[in-house]
Image 1 (spheres, rainbow, N blue to C red):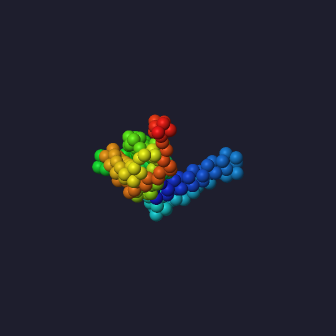
Image 2: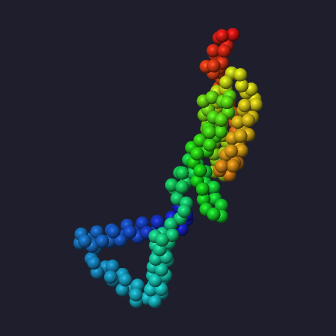
Image 3: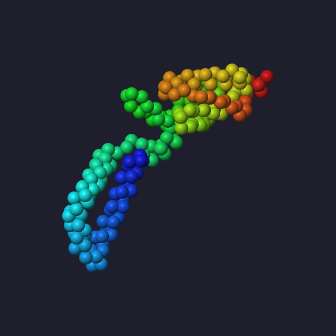
Length: 191
């Protein structure tokens, strides 16, 4: 919440609390209903007190109208959602891209490489929309690991930039182990 909204929230919460207590006290008979009217009569008798009261009431009315009709676009829900993705803004509006979307884009790119098997993608993001991607794959045994990882890094950065306009800070590739495909295993056993 913005500062003005917090102030309005505190003021109106306290005002409703006091009003509720006065009503309960009057209905239960503990407070004479004439007491609030006596207080208002005393305020009306003094020009300074009347001007101050009118000024305070106008400010409260404006705060109420602001809170009712002009809610802020940044709430706690937006802050929580930012942990699940990235908010990009431009002159035309806002675009919220989830982590899952970025992961799926990367997975689709990685699956296009013949030497990569069983890819997994993890993202690290900070508040300035800086994204680092960690890719974990299993490589086929006869794949050139260095060239495969370099190709994955370049292609993933390129496709993510093209589709989301998001610049990845780094694409780190980790290779768990190399394994033969079923066809390669049969060819090796036959030889």
